[in-house]
Length: 148
Image (cartoon, rainbow, N blue to C red; front, side):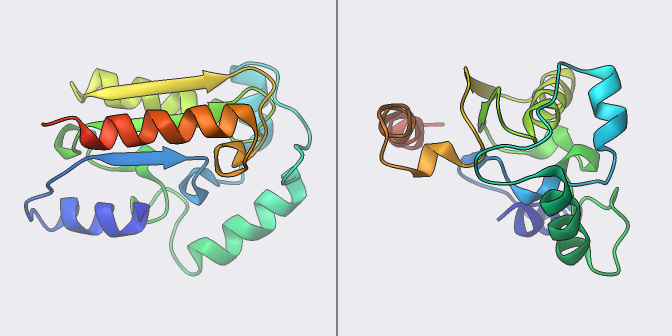
């Protein structure tokens, strides 16, 4: 869905509705060590994916595209034209620092961002039927039902 939204925004087509991100693959840029130095302590692996797995998946996902291409990562896209956006992350997710960076980028561009950071939650936890996942699903449903 991230690549699709970037294509719509970059073609200046109307982007309607709202968008929810949960630890999406757009945040894989092979700069894990740099993020670790700049941001909060990044776990070397999470319950669902390790840094080495993340790097391998990132290379497959990007294909021949540069990691900074907005079709690969919304961190480098046009943030001022995105619809209201909801982000879910966990402090035990290897993508946690990128979720924070994306929130900052959206806010700096004047975008509407609802950010949810759950303590000790791992990669894609919100899709698992655990109490935190169930709460996240309710938050997503509420967000999607909000008129824009």
